[in-house]
Length: 329
Length: 268
Image: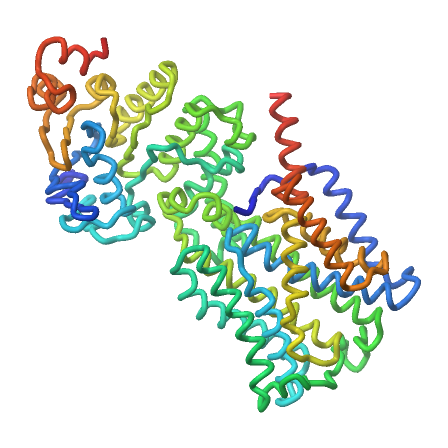
């Protein structure tokens, strides 16, 4: 079962590291040598947000969900269709996509969370595969494998002045960074509240939580809906970076990236999952690995992690900290 | 006017597993401010009864009333919120969380702060958290774990975890605390501490049900005892009468003589 901890390892280092990361991230387009690097950093932000969503439901609430890629794709399709077929602005479409994902997760979760945790995994996998099938086959709506091209880039305006233009690599980067930071900060706030504490309680011991008046079902459903919202919003904005949406948005590549990021970062360890999003997005690009080699590298990292750090990097460091505390106790 | 009805009434409770009657027509009541002992040999249906009363198992028939409110068929979390708090035979605490986080979780469903206020961090929520922290500190101090409150519960010994579980069960100011084998696997020092805590809390009006194999402890600390055998209530009464009940001795040791009595009730 996924690790979950509300204790943050190395608090002083964490504060320093976070400040440094914030400065680096904010100024990245200013010193980035090329749009290519900025593009990789943009992709990393999307993976950071989507993986945070998976971390909420898996790391904190203890439910392994393969639906995250489904909500990511659903959000992408909803926003693309609302913009192209109904003339919505990208921002309104993104908001609507988030709402659709929440509604879908609540409807699906009401049924899927009444079964065992193992069955829940299978149901969420089926959900994502079903959505991919629909995207391929419901051609009158989704245009099948052709996809929906020509999506406009979002802009941030102040009156008539364009503050950020999504057509440029740096503009889209800052838009993604701003939106991503908002979502991540809101999620962090929620997880630090008593709602997040209840997610952890439900994950660690369902029966104990029930004996303390905590509804396991409601908290699991809330965590599932929150993960759907985050995944849907990330997918909905990501599609404007691509400019086109097709059934490839449901590709297993996205699902495995999110899972690897959460597992290696440490399920239930908020900041390490964010860190791993950047590592796993940037590393293969910087090493210029072929896609096939990437999968081999990821597989190796996953095996090594499970063998030597079964709770991920965050869990490993938390255990080390606890051992040190115990010695000084 | 104090209510005349018992605080907890269990009436005709029955539960079967695959045709085997684990609990068979069990009826008993708990008065306000008393410590009721529930004893019986292994497999006599004590834990199943507690699971049925607290909503962790669904009774086939019978009813449970807490302070006049019908709890039959309610879910475990609803029963907990009604004021019935429990601990478990195999100690349960959140190992990865600190002692303070453990006790805070045990309180948060009871202070009436809705989820949106919790998310918004309103003044009401902050006030509830502050009060919970104060209560948590008090209880952690009371069970003698104050120096450990910032450490993960995984650091505690088995006996210390039992003490933490007791503190968690008390966090919600429950009407009744049900302790399921609180002494199992615990050393004599901690047994004495648990006994002292129960007496001290009871003198302030806290009602307890104690399910235990340690008959000597039950006889020392309980005002009334219910004895179960094969799912049925075998005897009920004050410890002085239970000690002399031959059926109880037969149930425990298969014989009823002076030596058996000494063994069962004085542990020597």
